[in-house]
Image (cartoon, rainbow, N blue to C red; front, side):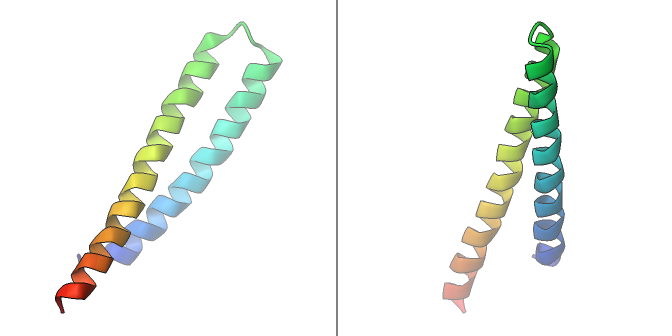
Length: 70
């Protein structure tokens, strides 16, 4: 994998930004609990966050398996 470091750095940066947006959305939902769209958007962002975390885990597993082959 040629761009492994770039992918890991980009996903970590995206995870950090998404985590901040999720916290702001939950704060907005706490201020206006009748707006269910805010909660739905936050839950969708949590799903995206889990997918980005899964990409990082799969890259680390690939590095460990690839290191054993050499």
